[in-house]
Length: 552
Ligand SMILES: Cc1cc2nc3c(=O)[nH]c(=O)nc-3n(C[C@H](O)[C@H](O)[C@H](O)COP(=O)(O)OP(=O)(O)OC[C@H]3O[C@@H](n4cnc5c(N)ncnc54)[C@H](O)[C@@H]3O)c2cc1C
Ligand SMILES: NC(=O)c1ccc[n+]([C@@H]2O[C@H](COP(=O)([O-])OP(=O)(O)OC[C@H]3O[C@@H](n4cnc5c(N)ncnc54)[C@H](OP(=O)(O)O)[C@@H]3O)[C@@H](O)[C@H]2O)c1
Image (cartoon, rainbow, N blue to C red; front, side):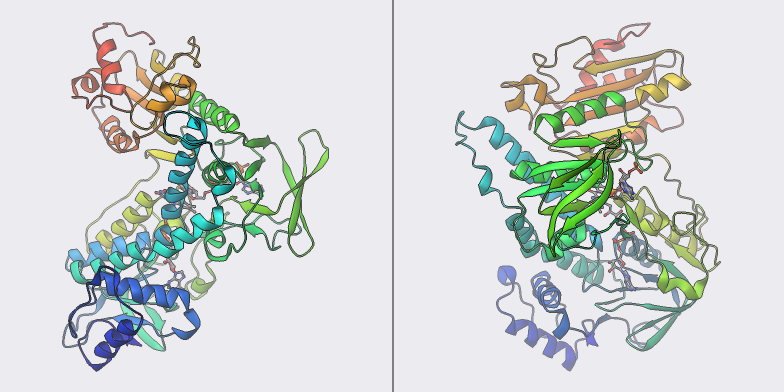
């Protein structure tokens, strides 16, 4: 046990130990007895992650009975997105929580292996894409595919990932006043009791927040060296891939496929359903999907739809993938790197003492208050199933906290704005055009480029991030659609491919889901910060004068 809370001898020796690791980032080392600084947390986390075998002691930030002798309102098992946000909220409401995580930091998989590296990779993909497209023009040199190394970019991420971890530990301790134990798994004993490093803690409630992990397809060879998922890519990649085959056809497949291809690693996506048509993605507009897929193909990604993966070939290391085509032919692709994006499932074995109800896919069943089938046990985040997104994980944790603290609070995550990356940002909310036409008789749309325009000469939408494309090859500059009910004038859906529009969708989603709705006239009243990436405001204003709206 390492006590990081109480300024005692143990704490002083911890600071001395951190001191031995070298200078702290930004030289912000605190005085003995003072709380660990962010820089010291960086060092401590780096050391523990790099050498887990010699750093097996847990990091305790738990109040002594003199500091707080109240019963715990909740123990959060897992301190990732859902566990940390739920804990912070419960604490802010005046409750007492304990958060336990197997990793030496709070924040979970998002900053360690999932969202944050994905955003770094997507930014690399966007930069590489532009550099390749513009090569030989303006200040852009000739592009050398070989200079973009996947392994190097992964290493860059690993070298910097403790910075956000450290901030979350520091913030959770110093600003949010949370109690936590890190770097040790929790063992669930019963619906009120959890064991950590041989010590038992009791609470009025448990909140289960242990996330999910990639569910690999059951095909021969899938465990061979050279087969990776989003997590093992970060932890285990030890060579430079030269050729990539991806299994799956949803967010992970599109995002990582676009990144690998942009680095110059020729990529093939084997997908059993058309890209972006998986059940976990809803409201995907056909026009948006077609633009996204055609732009991926334009960048050279091979997309094989209806492929059934039969075997990963290899002799100790992956050498290829065997698949069946929709017309029954068996084909082999040579590759030294297979990437699996076939969705995630939770590992619930640690909860067997609880006898939790689960659904047919293996996710925990909870009601809208996040209460599971066991009355004092709540669950939050990815272990409840899709959508596996940060907003949902965080708000589930908060919903559990609010209910535990005596407020009846329901969280419905059936509607939400969504996004993914290719080398573009792809964002959408509300209804697709086809869905709108099923529900409304007078659907009107504003679209760029319009259906009857030649996209090769239609240089809009464009704004920061797509200006160079607009002036050199207009079709690459993006795509958008606003779906409107012509009778009520309410906006029903918004869809965008480009750069910089993602933030707007957080607000558009909220506004169009207000009970009174959000009309094209309301949109036209906004003050645009021109050039605004999504162009929706000025396009709505150009159309809003019409009594009877028509397509644009
Ligand atoms: C590649 C990828 C990219 C993504 N990108 C985005 C994105 O851009 N935007 C977005 O909104 N969402 C994104 N997501 C989804 C997002 O990462 C998840 O929805 C979110 O992290 C889930 O949070 P959680 O709390 O359920 O689980 P996690 O954050 O994974 O936390 C689970 C925690 O439980 C701990 N734990 C497990 N077992 C134990 C145990 N026995 N004892 C103690 N602790 C334990 C783990 O150490 C971990 O910290 C992405 C997902 C992937 C796979
Ligand atoms: N916000 C973000 O940017 C972001 C980024 C990455 C991930 N995430 C989240 O993380 C979660 C995981 O993403 P994901 O893309 O891996 O999963 P997903 O959205 O669940 O999609 C799984 C994909 O794998 C295919 N698949 C499933 N089992 C298969 C099998 N046995 N053989 C072949 N193909 C199979 C599915 O095909 P079918 O359609 O035919 O079933 C689908 O294309 C998702 O919930 C996602 O929302 C979010």
